[in-house]
Length: 388
Image: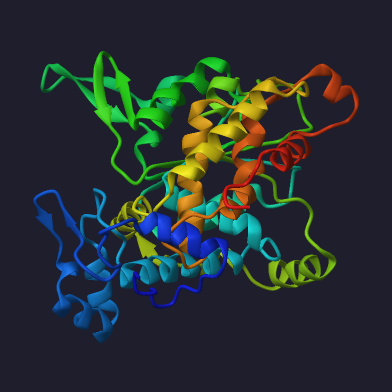
């Protein structure tokens, strides 16, 4: 029987999914991290000893290539989870009482996805995005979307250099690592469309020249759901490129009281500092990609997507891209929960935030006051859970 992995408690169905993920002949979690023709430092016992010696050595062990199908090493798993919790705690020092929303932001960061934050004015949408960006020491750019904003203001433009006698490219703010697209629905559809290639392919084509965007790359967009004058709603093609749609909501009474005290006596955001950098985030993303998902859970995701496409309450169902985003987000959530394998609850907990903005309700469902989240919750109840 495969040895139980340290620091991961399993019972019942979780043990079943862990055993299926391990598979016959798969080496233990703390063994070799060997890719095809590539062996990392973390595969040696000496590396594991150095990992215990101090934070600097642990961070060097994180900065290894983790591509391929090799299992996620136990110490690397715990280091990724520890670093992610530091980012969560850093954001929580500014955004009070919204732990689940903050966790979803970190999940999207680790999964390499984009976020759209949709909520009422003044609840902290922009502050949440800025706090996430400041928690990671990388290039950050903020774009205030307005009706007169042009695509070149976002992606960049070619400028003629008279001295050199040629055009040279001046990159726009989209070439940062984390980009805040504030009030994105106030810009024209033409400007909104300038993000399509950038978000999906991590590149921008200007004047027939393709410019790659350096990883990690994340777009965090905000919009107001109740104000429609002078706005242009995002089309479904662009909404589908956001991994999750989040909503902060109003804070609880105790959190709002603490918020009033902090924001009127000091500036918590000014005191915020980074707890990770871009190379560490890249290493964390690569490690998360190695989290195991058994074939039964892939079939479960397909069944959920099919349910959205066949339901009478849904006019437009979720796309295959939605299923990919759901699995990637579930992998990140599994790591944050201390596992190197995904269980059905990870998928169910993320379904509303990953699928909600990707479906269009039927007119009958809207007349009866149903929401996307409520419809998805009902559909999940009708899809059999593997191992149940």
